[in-house]
Image (cartoon, rainbow over all chains, first blue to last red; front, top):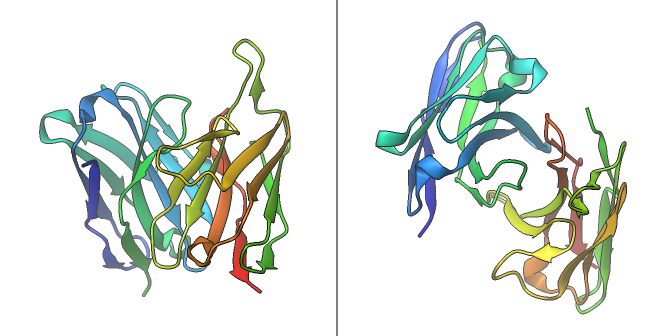
Length: 118
Length: 113
């Protein structure tokens, strides 16, 4: 069974940092593009970042460029999102999602809530 | 960026009746060399993560009931639920994966009348 399990969310003050993790199982992790997608409370979905299977290419939405870093460890079947300089606008549920290049997200984790507040 | 606009924002449909959701992109998501529309539909039930329903505008994901269908090309797309069931109450999102950043519509909430 394909499974994605996020962790690492929590409450952080504005300007702080947080690192999210996503543990993948049930598929060949190293063959897939992976993404982070977020959803602010009561709002819609926003793509955040993508990473190529070998980690060599990464793409970000403009609002997080220079602050967030997506990475992966294929030996550990894990995806990460390092989030720095957090603002209240980054408050959201963060989902890890699987997808091939130029393809939809066909599997999603349950999400982890990040709350940025003083 | 490609802007995705869904309409209506919400709709209430009687059980067994048809529900139709529209999605319009600000520029084409049809890639002419392979004649594919880079457009997907997702369903998000309350308290759950999104689930892929339709991709390439009209291809149902494995396991998705055939009452769900997608149509359209270029910039105008439609998700149709042919006979609404109670378990279809959810928010539905369209998404383009033609360009970066990938973008989603604002969502359409489907309820039972």
